[in-house]
Amino acid sequence: MPPNFPASAEELLPLVYAELRQLAAAKMARENPGMTLQPTALVHEAWLRLTRGGVEAAAPRWECRAHFFAAAGEAMRRILIDRARSRRAGRHGGGLERTELDTLEIPERAGDEVLLRVDDVLDALEREDPRSAELVKLRFFGGFELQEAALALGISDRTARRYWRFARAWLREALGRDGG
Image (cartoon, rainbow, N blue to C red; front, side, top):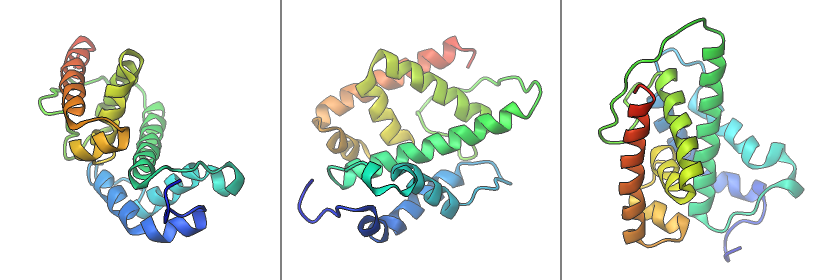
């Protein structure tokens, strides 16, 4: 672990809480109005997932700040996907709507169906090209700029741009195949 990087979860939380709250607020701004989950609750739930329920011995060790925030973004993504699946499971029917993927950004108010479709095609992309999928997750759900995502993945900016071009084309095609 790099020097000056906190060794325990108790040391890390006060240092990153405000940034985690900003990340959560940005993710929640994309949710439909009436969402019962608040940014603070999303941060707390993500924190529990990141630290394995608070069991210090089981908590993962992060290599750097970017690695930690990538993990936090993924944890928040999983929480939002799980909540969307849960809400969808409670409904009957609810046909899918066509979604255009012109710029690979979640619409300002993404509905559960859109979020779940994007998650499904990301899972398929991960099976096809795990590195490209990781880059998309960092950008799409983690709010990373391309250069930040490249740094977190340990790849060059040029390689990141190549992965990004491939992933965008692949996702457009996949969403089109799936009726999107």
